[in-house]
Length: 259
Length: 344
Image 1 (cartoon, rainbow over the protein chains, first blue to last red):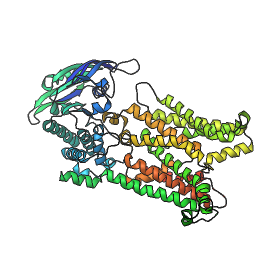
Image 2 (image 1 turned 45 degrees about the vertical axis):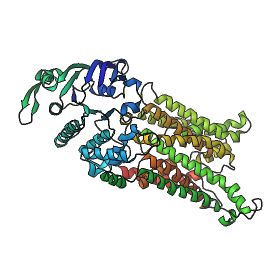
Image 3 (image 1 turned 45 degrees about the horizontal axis):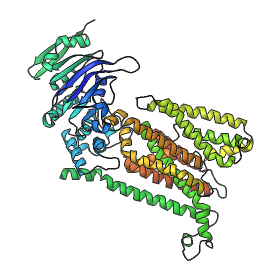
C-alpha cells in the first residue's frame, strides 16, 4: 500500500539516502533498524511526504505522494515523532482533536463525530482521565501516549513512528510497545517503527528493514533478518540473538564492540 | 455516545465558547469606544450625544463626540486590534510566546522610513507631512522583504530560527541608521522623530483610518482563515505538516498578513509597543490557548486595551498629554517581566 521506489534524498550535494526501495506490508508492524545517521528518519519523512525524494518516487496505493496535497496525505498517513513540544499550554483534548485537522475545512469547528473519535483515541491509549489536563505537565510516557492518541484521531490506515520510546524509561517502553501491538491487532493499523531498541523491534515487529549508510541492507521477516550477523553489520557489535521462551520472541544481548 | 457528550461538555463546546468570547469581548470593545469619547477637556453627555431631537448641526455634544474625539478612539481600537492579533500570529509562526509584531523588523523599518521623510522630506518634495505614513509603510515593507528573503530557501520551510535572527539583526541595524539620521537632523526634526516613535493616535480625521482599513481588514480575514493551522504550527512545523498543514503556504500567509497589518497600524499611529505581547498573554490566561478563541478575543480585547491606555494618556496629567506608547510600555514592561519570571 505504501511503497518507496528507488528513492534518494540529500541536502546540498551529498546523499543521506541512496536508491532505497521498500514495500510496507499492509496490516503489519514493520521495524526500521540501523545506526545513528543511517537514514531512518529521512526514509520516514519521505514515506509521509514531508520531504520529497530527489530521485525515485513514493507511492500510496496507485498515486504518488508528490502529486497529493498535504491534507490528502494526512488522511492516510499519520506520524508520531520522537518528542512533541508545543509552544503553548494546550490541553490533552485539544492536542488530540488537532488530529482531526485534515478532515475539517478552514472555518469548520469539530462536531460530535470528531469528539467521538477523540474519545475513542483517548480510551485506546489509556489517557481518557487526562483529557482536561495540560499537556505540558504530563510525564514523558503520558505525553507520548497523548501524541499517539492524536495520530489515532487522524483516523489513518498507516502510522509512522520515529523512535517512539527513545526518551522513555523501561516501564513506559513496555507500555508503548503493548499499546502499539494492541492497536495493530484491534484496528489493523499498518505501522512503521523506526527504533534503536532491538528488543522492542523483536517483540513488536513482524517484519524489519535494516539500513546502514543511507542504503537498505535487508528486509524481511524479523526471525530471518534479525540475526547476530545483522547486528554485527549494523552496529559493529557482537551480540547473542536468541529466542527467549518466557518473552516469546527473539532477544538481543550485546556482548562487545568490534573494532 | 454518552461518554463523548460528557467529554464535549467538559472540554466546552468550541462553537459555544467562540460565540461567548466574541460577544463578551465585543461588548467590552464597544463599551470602551462609546465611553472613551465622553472624557476630555469639555464635559459631554452620552444622552445628549444620541438625542435624535437635536439636529447634528446644533448638537455640540454630538459634534465633539463624533468629529473631535471619535477618530482618535477608532484609531486606538483599530491599531489595538491589529497589533494584538498580529502578535498572536507572530507568536504562533515563530513558535515563541515572547515574539511581538515588531520582532521581525517591521516597526524599525517603518521608523526608518518616517525618520528619513521627517529629516530630509522637506528638501525633496512638498507635502512632507502627509507622506510620513507612506514612508513608514514603505520602510516596513522593505524590512519585511529583507527578512523574508533571508529566511527563505527554495523547497524548504522557513526557518523560524533564521527569521528571529534576521529580525533581531535588522532591528539593530535600522536602529543604528535611525540614530545616524537623528544625528544629522536639527532639533525640530529630532523632536518630531522622537514624538513619532512614542506613538500617537491623534490622526485628526477619519481619512487616515479609511486608507489603512482595507489592509487591516484583509489581514484580519487571513488570520481568521489560518487559526486552526496556527494551532498546529505552534505544536511544531513537522507535526503540522503530517497533520495536513501546507507549511510553506501557511508560513508565507501568516508572515505577510501579520507584517502588512502591523505596517498599516504603525503607519497610522507610530510603533506603539507592548500591545502585541501583553494582550495575547492576558487573553490566554482568561480563555486558554486555542487560536480560534485567542485570535478574536485578542483583537477585541486589544481594541479595548489601547482605547483605555489612550484614555489614561489623555486624562491622567490633563491638560498635558502623556504619549500613549509610554502608557502601554509602563503597563506592558512590568507585565512582560512578570511573564518571564513566571516562565522560568
